[in-house]
Image (cartoon, rainbow, N blue to C red; front, side):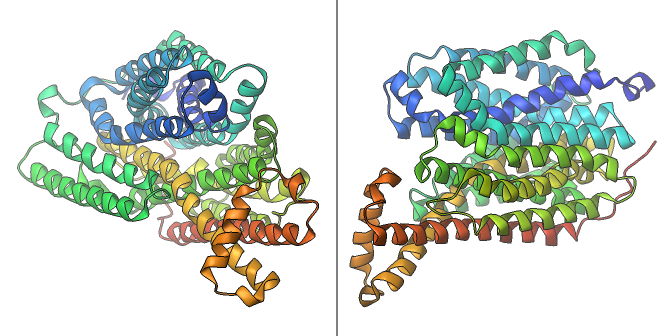
Length: 507
């Protein structure tokens, strides 16, 4: 790599970070717009939820193939192809007249485009900057994605409440144009492999494995038994993929994914940390947003506004993290972030009631976001710190796949935890207010049916006993969700202890 690339301006970072921003924004901003989309396109909720799920599914499924295509097509060229394709998809979505058109534009075209762009954002940064500049650049790109995912509900709320969900896609299209206009600010990189090196068989096996894995995860809350079977089949396919890639490399052929990369402890551990962190953030946001809209009856805009402290905490501490690496190493800062996130979860676990105010939630949301900011800012940098330059594209694909899987898993897994929490809350409420029916499954089912019929909190004011029962259910459910999230962050903390205190290259 020549010195002109090494001394690249920050303009390249801005252009690449914009791509990371719109891809993550796309995955969350429509969550608060579902009812309006259903009305506008004359469809149903399950269809729109399926379209949203398939966007994540397709992005994750094409990630490993995209990482290899960087070596064949060139990382900048592939990034720009993905950007142009993304523009086509977001335009199609913005002018959709039917659910089928929305599916093609958003799920299919944008899903493939996001897969082409995501690994390239990481590898372009790794190839463009070095040392402290690389740490800062990777932190900004990673955090742009996390912030976009976190402010998605607020952005979607503003668009849906004051304009239309279509303007959300139109805003992304404007950003795509900005990226393409300033494409010359991104350094170019020569491809290192040819088309004959493409492992087509490996690409098909990995695609099948990832599709089954993500599809199983996304349907966990709907049909648990079938989902587990699908997940196991996906894992089996990925094991076959790993064995196939190992044999291919042993035979002297170029593998789609060099399995030896997983011998790197930082890459292996860092990717799992990233996966679990995004799972925690996505799951917590989903549960809290559901509480705000279903229990407190907030509209889309106010829901997004309420979760803003988490975004602010994430942004402030993510920006702060690179400046601390001169005094503390990456491992310590990430560990501190884990502890902060756990504290945030524990604070929040005591805050959810029928009469909870928005101000009550702010401290816990801010501390949780701050902790995640430390983690997400430095996790990619330390994951790639020991990876040689020739393997950066492959490694970026692994890292991006972990992030994408985490985003996919969050809502599905927290959905199951919510169901378990409701069951536990109802059992507790029955024990307190109807001890004669303790352990009576039929009576508990009656309570569940009555609970589901409550559409407005004001309907409960006339019955003090019902208010207390619902309060217990809500408290136990949300406390359970936040405690499980704290446990996940505890696992992240333990994983952090396995990271090597990498000396991030300063030259």
